[in-house]
Length: 132
Length: 37
Image (tube, rainbow over all chains, first blue to last red; front, side, top):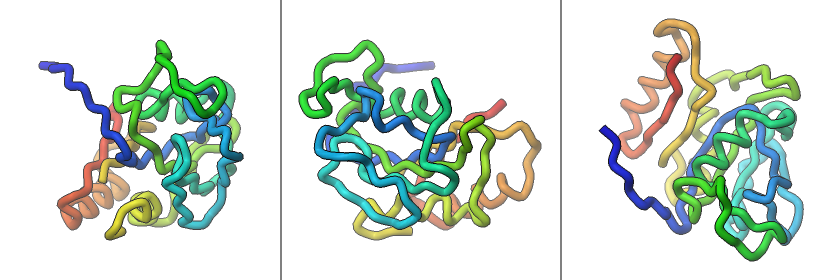
């Protein structure tokens, strides 16, 4: 059974691990500057959509990538200029939420997990008051 | 905290699946959404 619920999740952060994320896509683009993909736990809640990008593999997604699709489905919110949001036909189900992204894919979509599952989950938890 | 692991897995219940379960059991406020095939 499926019931539609209007989840806006304003200011919530969803953690996602996947093949990569095209941060220049209009559903994530942020005019305030480039997203810093790195191997630090840095979090910037002031960003429009991507508050953290942990580059476990390469910091990129492949063309029409799975990770970009998944993150768009969850938190995507169209803003062609990276600032002013407008209704997009592919807006996410929680379009007011943001993402903490953990990149586990190379440029062909092959996946590489970290040594421990804890690492996979721990990085995104730095977006919260009490990390795991 | 919600984590999407929608890359899924083809294998049976293996050591990675066990690690997922263990982590979720130890962290009551953590929800992992994982694709199944």
